[in-house]
Image (tube, rainbow, N blue to C red):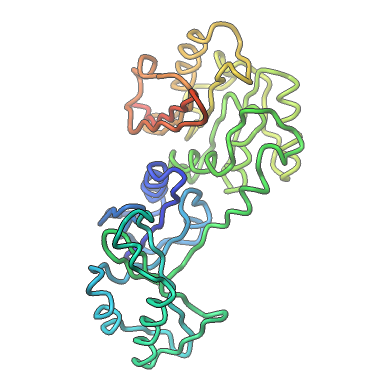
Length: 335
């Protein structure tokens, strides 16, 4: 089976990584066949709904049928074969290239949709523009990718879970869409995830809503109480401890994933010297993480000097505002 993914333009590098790392526990064997702009085509065994429901930085996914040049698109539609019985089909075209691309400007999506739909109709396919049973999507990037739409990520849910819409709010909290993608980077499917500096609980909430067991640690009593309020708001377990990330109250190799956002010392606080916090906390994260498992560490400073016991799988940089840049480290425990 071939699947295609249309990556959000908000943070495409993170979107590609999210798909790849989430595929690992859900697919015994998969291959990345192509990356084209914000389109990713993979070959995999059949993926269940729980894979697609977890996606955050992916706008849509589709069952991939063909990839062709723009000039060959109409010929490709004439050759398509469908097994939809009496289902009604419609065609939708999405231009993935930027508006500045001259070729993209020449493409009129409504006209192309009508033309491609007419080709299917001539083949005996039932066309239904209102409430169709299936949608044939064409994504036009460097090449044209044809597929059957099988998932659309609902973005309203992330707006509804914005930090300022939760019962307890503090500035600087991660946005839920980003937090969900970061959890997915670890590839966790079974076991437990730890956020040892959980703050208002955004990471814990996204993990819990995906059915992942989680545990949070927070140093400040007022913030820990607020985090518990937020968890209760979403009917999630209050698996939360008041404690110090530099001395975690867990035995060695307790967790299957760690995701945490370090204080930036702007709108947040930290205990003591920041350098000491990084050194001791990363030692503790390494201690409680199981061998071969992954952690995602988010900071506004470089962390390479503290990651000797980990292998670095990826480092992403995201501009938050003005001079604030967020570093996202995906690391794997070596032993």
